[in-house]
Length: 333
Ligand SMILES: Cc1cc2nc3c(=O)[nH]c(=O)nc-3n(C[C@H](O)[C@H](O)[C@H](O)COP(=O)(O)O)c2cc1C
Image (tube, rainbow, N blue to C red; front, top):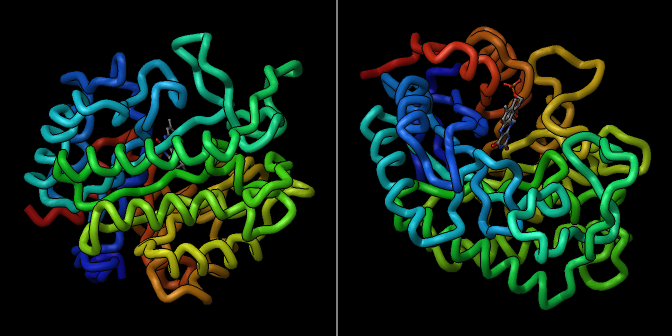
């Protein structure tokens, strides 16, 4: 039942409904504006969500996905996040922060910055890249990967300083970590190689273990996995199961299932829980909770997906963007 509490890592969440990370389009220069606080206040009032995942924030200035994206790339961002997390806590929900690097999909402020990816294959949200002659990204060197991992750890620490209850690492929708995960975009031949699944998730494991080490045992650590590309030659449900088992072993508390290079929608599948085949397969194997997002319009859609064992928690995105009062029936304050 949606109203049942659930233990995720060391956190007892009061219900199973999650506010999915949704870019609010309210920030400028990486900083939140009054519109950001109003946006989150309206959508979290009453503490109606067991968990709120704050939208993807860029961890480094070469990984910005859009001009109005939120930043966690600099210490000066911390005070803005403090105000946001205080607001969500005051409203009564647990809050975690999503970390992202857009990889070759990034808008580079400074054109001297390289477009980077796992290999020299271009991708945007949706496959193949919408630009017929896209700039070919530079494959990250091993030193470049180490520097990137360091940027993730610093961003996670900033999140902790701001007061978040945990971190969600974004590896979905064709962004950088997804570019490593999908065999369509990872053509490397080194230890982060695209030929083996162990190679494709090596960077994820290093980031997860690194974050766990710096944040400690208590904060909730989630990974948003674009589990399946639904594209010939792309990542598969079996890949998602193997990867999730490895992430669990590495210290993740919650597997957050979404789409891979197909982005957050699944063509030809408008039904609630359209990534339910992935989340169900993952849920059967892992011992940690699984979150399913995609296509949920009503609380009864969410209830049906829980009853059908498609996930342990259910996320909602576009429906609450459209209607800030969505799910108010779950309010406890
Ligand atoms: C405008 C918009 C912004 C989004 N921003 C993010 C984001 O910041 N991080 C993320 O992981 N997913 C993001 N998503 C995907 C959503 O979290 C969610 O997975 C997707 O909308 C499907 O769920 P829904 O059918 O409930 O909307 C975004 C989706 C939309 C439409």
